[in-house]
Length: 222
Length: 291
Image 1: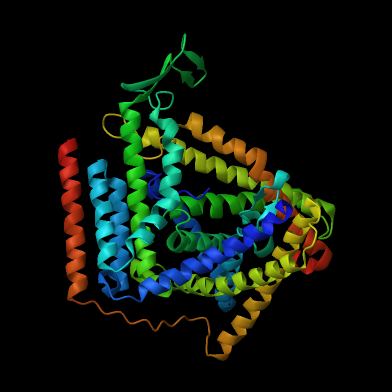
Image 2: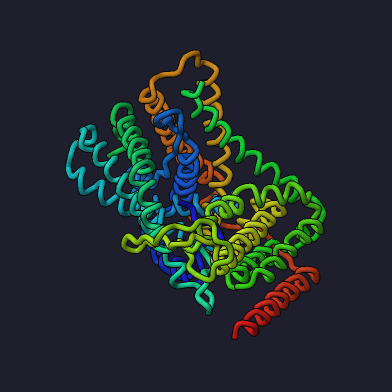
């Protein structure tokens, strides 16, 4: 889901930087008020945790493996604003140091995964979990549904950004200059693989980690 | 053994991160052109080059920039073969494979160059059309060449930046791009503690692998991975508290004081002027052709 450099035109990646900026500013403001001096190590460790979640491969059917992005899980564990910064920092490090995702696409990738992914996941979780007890079954089911929906929303927004390229950003003679696939190809392709496979991986990892905490350390969820 | 493949894949992913870091530190210490530059100027110019690449429309201009990245790699004593391999192996090669269907008139309509298949008639379902003659189009070919060239040139400069700059310097240099101090500090600390976590994961997975004589059921293995993520998070919180206390004992009171001292020299000014002039000429030449 990490969009590399060269896939989005300047109009799109510029807009996405502008769209992500108010969320980064709001998160910094919010955390400055709530976390005080403790925020620096807390955010850094949260970001490192966000980075390493993607390294945990889990076995899926038929010997294949997959990994989760962890946006909803981190939002449940450290709250949505801290999660926004943590996932963003992890994405920035991946883009600058590891070439996972483009530098020009940092705004778009952060908006898709750190803003949309985190807030959709967190809102769904709060809505479904309601006032249920920390150790209740409803909590992990809420986490699974939230993670599934959140990942699919992120994938859909990514697909729309890619699918808009042949319409928004093309040469004067109409030839595509960036990602060449229109919405009618980009959206179903991304949606299918996330609806049928990656969404379930995300849901499984999120629910299993929540169940682990319910059993071993329920305080982490309160 | 395929049931424990996830253990090997995770160990491999951890090893790759460590290898990249080691590889970059090694080249960043060499005495070459890019290593000479002030990191702030270097970041600004590389960002300028990446934005410039995104504005260019002609394959020739993109190839010229790709050529520039190769020349800079040589002048910076980066081994050309490993540089080219690292650039092409992942994103551009993947992009070239992904873009193949866009060569055809099914995706990119236009003037046919080579007819691959002739059907009895054309087919249409909603927004999808399969034309009677499936062909590679001039527009599809041109668009794909521009796309892959742009991706390759962008990745080339991004890789060159990380290979010739110490990672801690990159974060310090971000201050020059007006990135708030709290972000820069978080990035720096994340980078540092990332390796502590990687070591932890490696130890957990190696220990597990060395004890494995028979794989558990898939559900059992998934439960084990989830418990490891849980353990890492618990350790994260403990570590965060320990680090905070360690920072307090060293005089931290919420204000971040930075000790980086940067100094620009003649070579930095010459480099900045050359890159901006080069970019402006390239852009003016292209836009002149299009208008």
